[in-house]
Structure formats: C-alpha cells, structure tokens
Length: 163
Image (cartoon, rainbow, N blue to C red; front, side):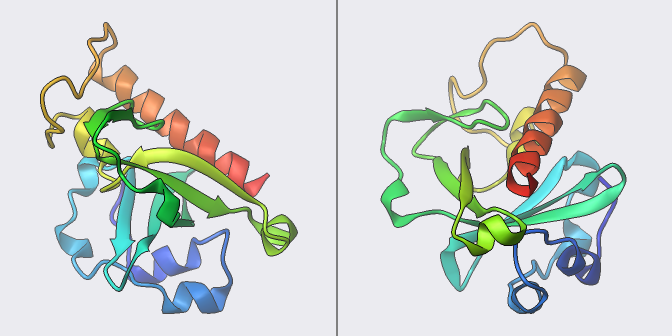
C-alpha cells in the first residue's frame, strides 16, 4: 500500500459524514507506518477504545471505514479466528461493526466481522508480528496467496458496507 496523508485518509471514509471524518483520530505516526507491508492501515481511537478505523486502497483509490467494537464483544480467553487474515488469537479477536454507507447506515443498518483486535492483520500474515504458538494455521498457500486472500477478505467486507 502506498503511504497516505491525513487528508487522503479523512477524505476516504465512506460510512461517516465529512464532519465525523474531520473530527476522528488519525494516527500521528503516519510517516513511520510500514506501508510496504500493509494491505490496510488499521487503528483504534486512543480517546475511545471502542472506535476503530481502517483504510485501504481499492482499485487504486483509498477507501476508509469507521468501525465500532461493541462492549458485548469483550475478549474471551478462548482461541478465536480473525475473519480477514485467519490468524488465531487467545483473546485477540474483536467483533468490529461498521455502519453501512449512505441511507442504510443512516437508518441504523450495519455489517460486522471478526478482526484482529489490534488491526495488524497484514503484519500477522507476513510474519512481521507474532500472535503466539499455533496462531497461524498450517497451509500450503504461498505468502502471496495469503496476502491476496487477506486483500480479498477486506475488499469483500468493504463491499458489504457499501452495498
């Protein structure tokens, strides 16, 4: 993924108003992000831990989502699997819910998926971050195929939000 500026990120949100996008917390360390290893940039709002955001490039254009982690999705100490990168965690997967884009979102409709709580799926897939023993399933896929699957899963989630 190519590096993005704060302005590009704020302009890319598809499921919140421009005012909400202007007020949300964007990481201050954008220049230090490992962009070449990211399929999407994900972060939590330090002021509101139940809020999270992600931005990725779809068809060459940045697309961003505002997410919430409902309080009922308290991390349990059983092993859970991220729906995006298929990394198993003990207590490290959260249900993330995104309001649908447009009128459907204004009416309260949303879409959810289970994501790595730290939103570091790209780094887990590439082995740059360790989720512990047994976190990565034994697969015959190449690294490129795993990356493509992760990209496809995040694109499918965004498609559900924007449908």
